[in-house]
Image 1 (cartoon, rainbow, N blue to C red):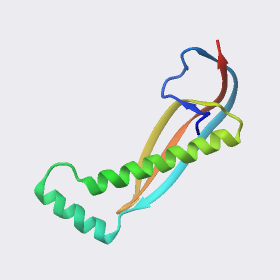
Image 2 (cartoon, one colour; image 1 turned 90 degrees about the vertical axis):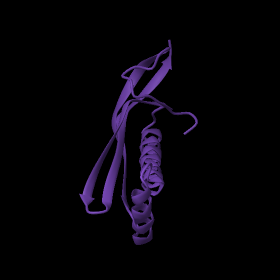
Image 3 (cartoon, rainbow, N blue to C red; image 1 turned 135 degrees about the horizontal axis):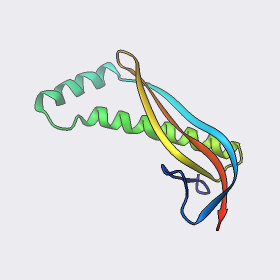
Image 4 (tube, rainbow, N blue to C red; image 1 turned 30 degrees about the horizontal axis):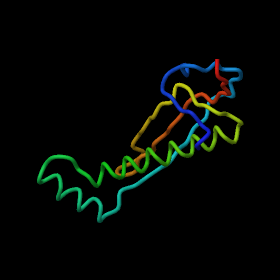
Length: 109
């Protein structure tokens, strides 16, 4: 995704949108393993950052982000504007993470 610029803003400074290609998204569904839950439970006892869950969340976000980027490239975009994340628990221990934004073609001003 070296050629793809991604921003959470509605504009990309120094560029103008010449074509909008619509919404692109990347979706991943992740679950915690039994061993991961046990390890995280032990971390909860000690308090602080639950690194096992933090790592799982970061991997899920990165996977959704990468899938969104692939979707945009397939549509011919060179940028994604208004990028956002959304996450929902589908069932106990199973979470979906969605990355989405507007795929566009931009050129320097």
